[in-house]
Image (cartoon, rainbow, N blue to C red; front, side, top):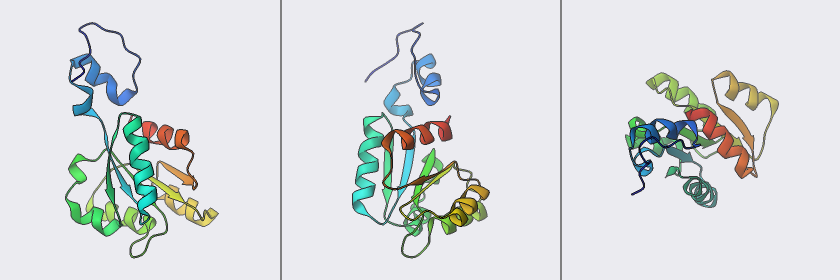
Amino acid sequence: MVRAPAGAHLSLPPWRSACAASGVTFLSFAPLIAIVDDDPGVRGSVDSLLRSAGMAGLAFASAEELLASGAQGRLACIVTDLHMPGMTGLELQAEMALRGWRHPVIVMTAYPTDAARDQAMGRGAAAFLTKPIDPDGLLEAIERAVA
């Protein structure tokens, strides 16, 4: 376990600052990010990216799987594909609002349209990203969303 030394001045992302100041281990405070995508390759890639940045991912093959998981109390942010079989990313956003979930949502898609972008952002999405995803762009969007 890594602990911040007492009185240390570390340059950390905002979601880790409180952790360092209190001496809590970073691993216990790593934000948990839901990854919702029907493509297992995308889920795996995003999960690996998150781990490399000191975050934790929780992968779901569908929006319905996320909604049924009971994990909402542990999540800091939700990264979702727009086009999936069953419930779409936009429908997931709407259902989250109905359930009172206030998590930041980042929508990603290989088929962006102005209409989809406007809908997602109008429903409060933190970001709308085009696949293939730029890793730095996704990490920046997550950092902003969980700050």
